[in-house]
Length: 80
Image (cartoon, rainbow, N blue to C red; front, side, top):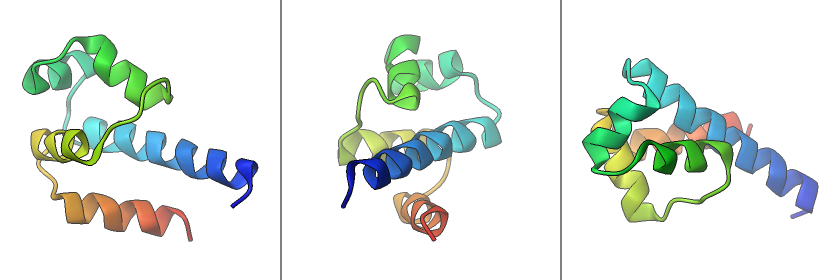
């Protein structure tokens, strides 16, 4: 995979993370509170400054009321 392709996929991941938060009607601060994290935690993973591990991603999905499976499906569809 080329670096350019990888960067495009990372950008799509970040966009989807923002999208699911907004669909849930949450600000970064709201979501951070639900996760027991500072607002900067959400800001950093949405901007790509930080990456989430799968357990953290699962927590984010739970907080915005979508399944991890739905998130991955939507992410894969965004790559098509």
